[in-house]
Length: 329
Image 1 (cartoon, rainbow, N blue to C red):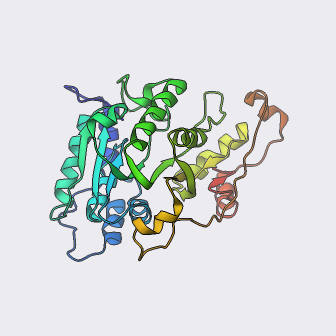
Image 2: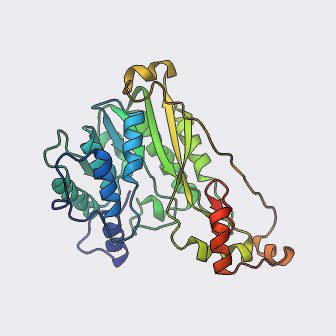
């Protein structure tokens, strides 16, 4: 959910539009007969170095949790990747976003990349709190990556969730989840990719748990939870300083949450039977939560200093990782 089109856009929004559509011109690079995996991997490889939504994750989610030829609803369609990958897999995609500028960029990408596909992605400009009016119908999968509260403010539009106080953000967020779930067919999945965010004092807000609450109140149950390891980038450099100052671990992962409504016994009847007989994923990680009471400003006073030389911490990063979190990151 981003900003509505105006006569001019801010440099901040320009940068966001560019980063979300840094797929490049794939016309010359497209190779006839390549697999979807090869295509989506190229989409991930093209660009300015700014991260985009992982297209390989898209393919996995679509193949695992959407029936062949199914329809997808995306209430936070801030980039073109989810729509383009859906088209490449023969799926019907509908995405909603506040930013007309962003939607136009998404459409331009799809016109270039998705020529000849059975279904072209559909993007709608509007507020996803009005999802039932903007995109009426029934869907086989809800798949999205919401804004992480005010971690990145995308515009000055008061309808933009990233501009809201956290309490107001959660209220609007839950309303959007409820609207989408009400349009989901029975015995179907919803998959959200989320990450936690800190408040101004440095405490985690527990955004993933609020996401679970929103789906459960809308009638769905958490069925699978996976960890997506994200690019490290400059994290080893930044992490040493923030760990020494306040014992904050850097995060190198996002949570991929799959919710289900209906009878799990019906899953293998509606999803691609040749791919997997059920969608109950094995869990190969444990969570290590760390809690604190008091003023975070006292942490540095109460705990001994640790040598966090950048070169040394780069080595630590290669060896010490807790579920995508690291003491040097």
